[in-house]
Length: 74
Image 1 (cartoon, rainbow, N blue to C red):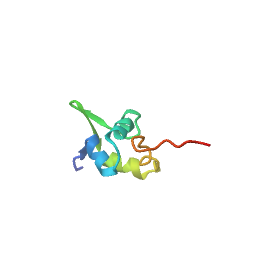
Image 2 (image 1 turned 60 degrees about the vertical axis):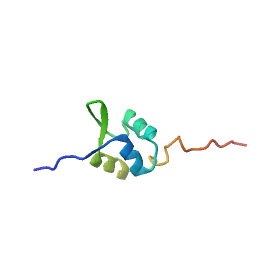
Image 3 (image 1 turned 180 degrees about the vertical axis):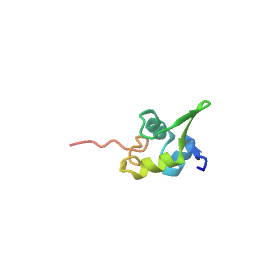
Image 4 (image 1 turned 90 degrees about the vertical axis):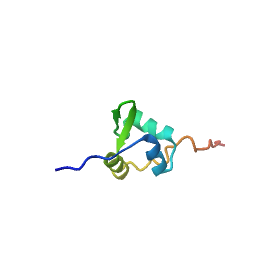
C-alpha cells in the first residue's frame, strides 16, 4: 500500500528554496518542475521537487532573475 503524496504550493516551494514565487511559477510553466492542477491552484508533489533538485538540475537555485544584477561588459 502506498502512502499519499504530499503537495506544496508555489509559495511553499519558494520559501523552502529561498527564491521568488515568480521563479517557481516559471519553472512550472516551462515544465522544469512537474505540477498538478487542483481546483484553481498548481501544486507540486514533494517527491517530484526532490527528484528535480537532486537529479542533475544544479542551476535551478541561480535562475532567480528577480535577484540578479546587470553587469556591464567593458
